[in-house]
Length: 377
Image 1 (cartoon, rainbow, N blue to C red):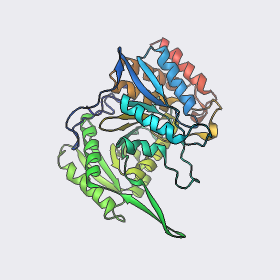
Image 2: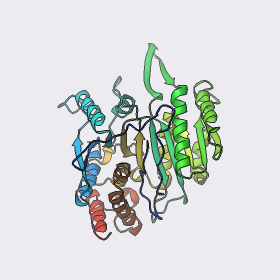
Image 3: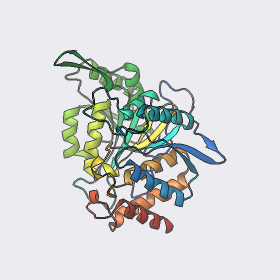
Image 4: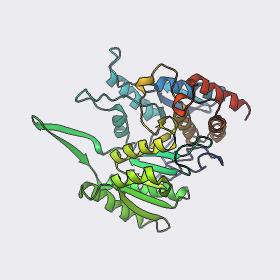
């Protein structure tokens, strides 16, 4: 299985098989995912990330420790910031080697400076280096936390390794920059099969391809055409496609129409952020990044949070739920159920909420509330 159960199953939360699929994509013939395990304990690469990453990662470690989760962390403090201490490239290579050993990772978001020309995003580089090609982000209302829209339940599946994120830019002459968007049939077919496998395994009804083929007729045209070719193998599913600007409008006006959405890299970034806003913000959305041999779990809405770093204000929900997705992937369902249920119940109670959810509680307060709730489960 390329994806075992990743998100907690309760009647009031995310459906049990929210992220379940098969290693039966076109490029995969056998299950080669074997996480590192010693003496009944899993070794997992932990990359806390920049900004609020260290704080929300600490919440996860505290909760895992209380629940006696059989996971040992191999922590690599990769950073996109210029710290002047350890060369970021060295730390990045360490993280790649760690993930190659352990196969499974939990990661915060790494900062990518806008102003430094030539600086590669470590987030993108990691996904490209390990071919972690499928981003899976669940957008679903949290029980007990009211937002403008209700009954939102969609999954955004994003191709992670090409498109506008290929990093191929150059200045041909002063004042003229060319940025290359790469779309290949192989990777378009792979992500389409992933999306359809996900939908089939999770009793989803519809898969929508998001594109801009009316303008980018070759690149997005290839992606859209390949999607429809693959769809013929799944006649039981409803299939449609939608131009990305229309999809953005539809997402904020009637998000209930969407089920599973599959799209190239940049559009996935945009719609994941729109989706997060629909259900409460980036602090609530878990995510997973899947490859043939490696899987990295991280918040689904990739925000660093430098503005609130060190203030004990961050909402750790996205990181904690990403960690429970990881536990389900490892087959540690009991721990995943207990932790995620505690998170959902704390949010539903409404007594302890961080600032982004309209409350005044700190990261530590929220984490402690989860710990106390777990004692009753």
